[in-house]
Length: 361
Image (cartoon, rainbow, N blue to C red; front, side, top):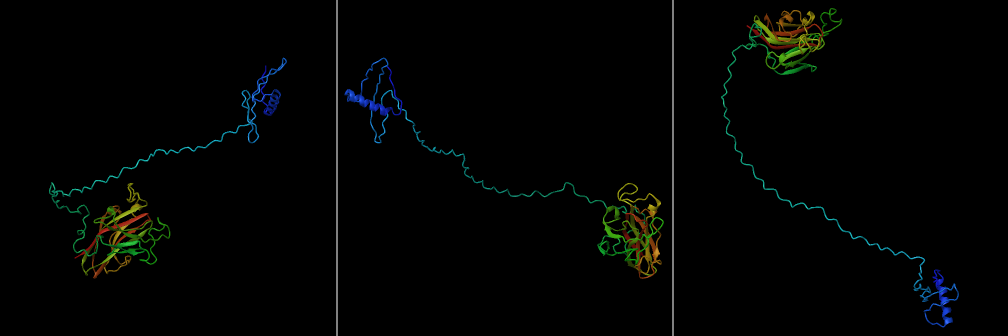
């Protein structure tokens, strides 16, 4: 016997009709039917359990008969319900700062107690007075340096200096500059030895004047008077007029120094020393003392009194040398000119003078 299970979607309607017919034919008014044997070898036993309730919409209810499985065409997926997660705050990591603890009350410094009065271990003993003549190593002048009665004002060149011309000429207040060039000499002066070492047409120049504080260029005190003819030949110096009486015998003196070089290095290889290798080098600087016994102020008058030339042999290159001259006064005033002549236009034609004096009796 075979049991046929109907799986067609229309089986429910067909079965309902068949069962109704069977019920009517067999006078069975029950909702259940017993299985009937069909004749023949291929008889098929059909067991049908049918319930035909109807819904309000007329749609048959799926069979509850065991063995018949009603597979719906589609089953809607259940609607997902979104449950928001419950937010759990993270534990706080901020640790509150500790309550401020007030600083301890300031404790005042202890009262200052001065140290005991200092007592030197050894009582200072005054240094003995130097009895040696400070100028003992210098050439002895006709009279002592800066003697009483010196008729020159500021012969030690320690007073104030002032600008005289163009801001390049500074002399001490009691002294005046002069030079063989304009404006002191109208038209200027030609250089010496033109055509014999100096070019044609070379003229002397006006030096620059200033106080010097370089220790090696100061004979005593703190300063001396300096003038220099940079890359020029020149004949120049300083002068001062002083009182005299006719018939007085007067003596003039000073300490002078020469720097003469074509560059900063001298013959000995030292900086800021003179170059004196040849005779022409040694002839470059000559010092003179010129006197106008009438008190005039022009140094280049041929009638003036002149000392001999003080040359290289007198030792004024790179060190101070003493020069002097004596004369007889003829009027109430006289003028002294301390003069230096430079033969060649060397780079360094520098002249220095210090400790000048005039004494008369």
